[in-house]
Structures are given as C-alpha cells and as structure tokens.
Length: 435
Image (cartoon, rainbow, N blue to C red; front, side, top):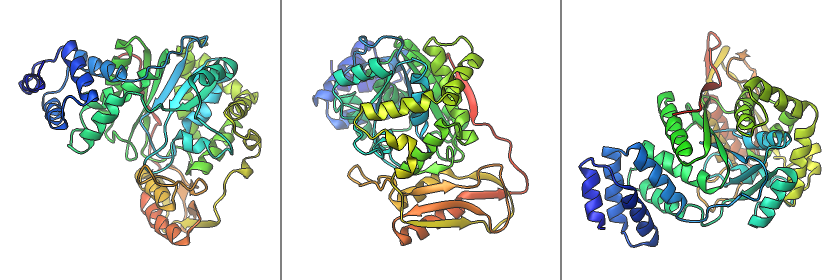
C-alpha cells in the first residue's frame, strides 16, 4: 500500500477498507508514514467524513496500537464511566464508590487534568499517600477484593491516538465527529471493561457547546462501543453552569464526601444518579431505573458508599481517615467573598469563566509540567435559579495569593448572569442506549 493512494481515495470521497485503515494506523505509529501525509489524510477526513465502518475500524486500530487491559480475571460485569469533561466534575469520586458498594466491579483508568482544574487522579492525591501507580496485578486484585480501583493511564495506552491527536491539534483537524469519537473510545476500549457509560457534556463549559453536537457525538460513541462488542450508554448532561458548588481539587473532594453523606448539591446528585442508574442496569443488579436509583440511594443512606470510598483510598496507600474528617484536607490561606451588584435570579453561570478563575488561582494546569495547588478554588453560593439580592455572596474564593484572588474575582463576577425570572433547565438532556 501507499499512503499517497489512500489520501487520494479519501480526498475523492471513497471509503477506506479495514485493511487500509489498519495499515495506515500501524505504519504511522511506527513512524513509517510522515506527519505531512497524515495531516493531508486528516484534512481529507474533515472535508469528506468517515462512514460507520471506517470510524469503528479507526477506533479499533488505535485501541490495538498499544496495551489492551485483560480484565477477564475480575469476576462480574466490569462497568466503566467516562466524562467528556467539565467544570466541577467530581462525579467519579462519588459514583464509583456508590456503584462498587452494590457489588459491581469498577475498574477505571484515569488521567491528570490539563486545564481549569485537576483530573480525578489529582483530586484523589488530596489524600496523603494515595497513589494510582499500581501494577496490573495489584489493580485487578483490588477490584476483586473491594470492587473498586483506579489506576493511571499506562504510557502505552492507545499510542496511535496520542500521536494522532497531537498532529490534529496543530493542523486544525480536531473538530471532526468521527475523529473525536474514535479518539475517546479507543482509550475506553483499551481499558478493558465490559460495559461503558458515557457522560457527554453540553453547554458553555463543555467541549461540545451546542446540544445538537453533543447528541451527535453521543450517538457516534454509542455506535462505536456497541460495534466493538461493549454495551454502551450515553447520558447527555448540562454544563451551562459548573457541576455542584465546588471547583478546585480539595474543595471538590470535600463536596464528594458531603455527597456520600447525603448532602450533595441537587444538580450534582441528579447527574450522579442518572449515570449510576445506567451503570447498575449494565452491571445486572437492577431491571429498571427506579430499582437502580433505590439501590444507589440505599448505599448512601446506609453509609456503605462512604465506607467504600475509605476502603478504596486505603487500598491505594492513602489515609482513609480523611474521608471521615474532611477538615484535614488542604485548605487555602486567603478567603474572599464575591458580592452581587444586581438583584434578580441567577439565569446562567458561565462555567468556562469559573474554570478560568480556578486556573488563575493555581487549581489547574496551563502546561503538562505545571504544579497544581490542591487547596485553592471557588465555592459557589448561588446557583442557577437562586434569587439574589444586592450585596449577597455569589461565591467564595479560596486562594494562597491575594493578587490571584483579585484577578479571579473579576472572572467570577462576569460569569454570573442575573435576570428577572428563574430559568427552566434540566441537568439531563437525554439518554442514548442505541445510536
């Protein structure tokens, strides 16, 4: 085969065969196909698109370009959850212990955040001693023993996707639906679970800001997952305001612990339960959403989910006492309240602006080498639909640098939109079980 011929074929709108896509991905990963040729191919895909068979084969080829976890030695149906990312998204910290407390094995690979706040691993490292640097054997042993483990992504997980995404990022070829979906799903399929629940965000703070685009991506990923033999469900959720009240690593961990104590913010718990219901259904522990919701609710009320979080933290070297004493978690030295200069109802909170405020405070990474301050962040006191009077506190800033706090203040004030009436909005936009 020649890459020149494949570029020409795609440029003319023809479909590439399984063998051609497999060869192309393999040769590009090995360095035999130069960047300039793959750039031409990616641009041709942006203009001509890929059909369902091409998209699935691209995903499988990227999955198979590196390590694929074999979780067959874990008993039960392994269910994984993936979020397309958002501001204040600490869902895994609450959802994974709730589901594991029901006896459903949750074997999850997570990464560190590059952006507004840290990723799941950064948040978990608020517990002293906690590590995700586990051997595959330890990872599997933990899941079999306590039904939950999270380990860092291996360096050789879908290396073709890493290389291809870096190229797309600098050649204006990121925003193409088949390429986005295959990139996400190649890593989820390589992680080895039997079933996958996808949390696809839409709104100001999401990758897919338009709802129609979010549904299109959800359909594409469900199609890929089912085509690869994994039962896959997508839940499209709102990100037109930060999820929950806490934005920032230790603050989000504290909110996760509150949630497992039955005191979580209503918008956050609506998303947690919607995702959890699908995980419980896929895990075979319930036959209806109502039954699944009742089981998850009981896991919280009984304290089983909170206990599971402590067991999980301790199993990975962390201090589980922090779960029961969250006041021990890192705390910032400066507190600044953001006051309202308007009256009315909160109609919208621009999630991206709140995320940027957290980044300014040091709660996220602008580069891969940036150090994260786990103690800083923003705690929202007024959410969408809340009535606000002049001088009310909209949010509280937690900072270790006063100048950074003042800069973040401006971002937060501008993020709040105040209107004359409360808006009508739902956190759950839709659930897709089939494409």
